Amino acid sequence: MKKYRSLAYLFILPAVVAMIFVHIVPMAWGIMISFRDLNVFNIRDWTTAPFVGLDNYKKGFNPVTTIGQRFWQSVYNNLVFGFFTISIGFVIAMGVALLLNQPFYGRTFVRGLILIPYITPDVVVYNFWRFIFQARIGIFNEMLLKLGIIQERVIWLVGSNTIWTAIIAAIWKGWPFGALILLAGLQTIPTELYEAAKIDGANWWQRFRYVTIPFLQPVIKTLMIMNILWNFHAYNQFRVLFGDDPGRYAEVPSTLIMREAFNFFRYGLGSALSVILMLIMLAITLIYLSLFKVRVVE
Image 1 (cartoon, one colour):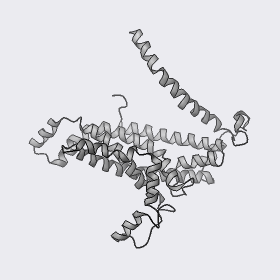
Image 2 (cartoon, rainbow, N blue to C red):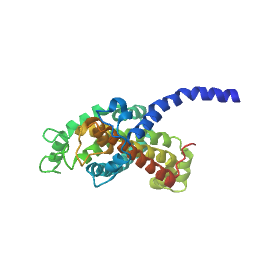
Image 3 (tube, rainbow, N blue to C red):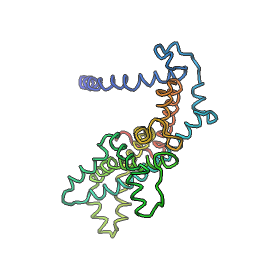
Image 4 (cartoon, rainbow, N blue to C red):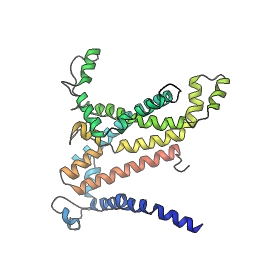
């Protein structure tokens, strides 16, 4: 038994080493430099950077400071973005999963086809949507004008509409993954349960509510926590759609941290903002796991 246990440890050793160098070491280094005024002038030897204690955290956490205002605005934007992206994306994914779980000709082909948005590189997808949302030549405005929904062209890539642009694009990009996960969960539900429910006189809504949803709960809970974490550190869609500075209406923590650290070379402040974001995500995860009691290990 000890021999097999030692062999198992040997097999996971490469993954553990990779985790240490890819995740643990950068995280520890980021926490250390968050207490220093690290910038482009002393980056070659970070140990010579002045120790500033919690000053970087005060700048980033205090809503009175300029950076603090932008950080909390970015957190609010991210919450709005995540709420609509996750909720609407889940409804679409569930509907598609239910349809693809029904027998029809070409079902396997369609199941593969719906993954195209998800497997397409982010830069391609969001550049595509950037073209769609162009105010003057974009087909989104053209469609709304022809339907009579708007009377003049709307600017989608600048100003207060930018967050909705990112939400629409992110929903289109992300729902296929949710549909695939939910479809896998639907296929584990015994058909006998639906047949028994039909015999008892249950309609489609009652079968969905009392059979499908209870059996999908572990899958839904896992999918939701994954989506929460992914959406809370969203970066690609905002960077590709709006450039280096998305503006106050579409600023998210990831774009703010990237700009402060690598555009303005305030590495200590960027690290402090990253640590604050990590703590917020950790708190959200713990609250979610506590409320919904997600079983991480089955």
